[in-house]
Length: 191
Image (tube, rainbow, N blue to C red):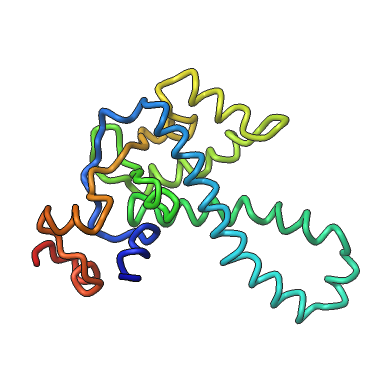
């Protein structure tokens, strides 16, 4: 049972089929915001915070000398960490844990899996999307004015769409998909 609960966050090599017709939906845009919040939480709390703790322990004098600037520096370090995290997971799996949880998938505009180059371009342009006061002005306005694609998606030729995978255990069983961890690890589709 816990295994199925983790499926709500863990990407797998076996990508679900993309629903390309959902590319311009406003609810996909809102789901992308929720996915980004989940991914930022994962990056900061599960990856960066333990590193800060270890570095703060090893270099305690330097850490104490930084005082309140340590938090600001950690937030500045979060952006390259987030971009790298998104790049690797979108290239390898087509989605991050946040996108898995929200039922989203990054694919090329023609529905093929996201390529190495496309993932790199879309995540490098994340820096451009964050320009503005407050941040995210350019990215948000671009997504609202166009078909829900941010600047990085346009440059890379990608779209973020809903996936058509079953969202619950009963749906997966009725679709004849093996829900065991062993089957997911080996990539098998049959019971």
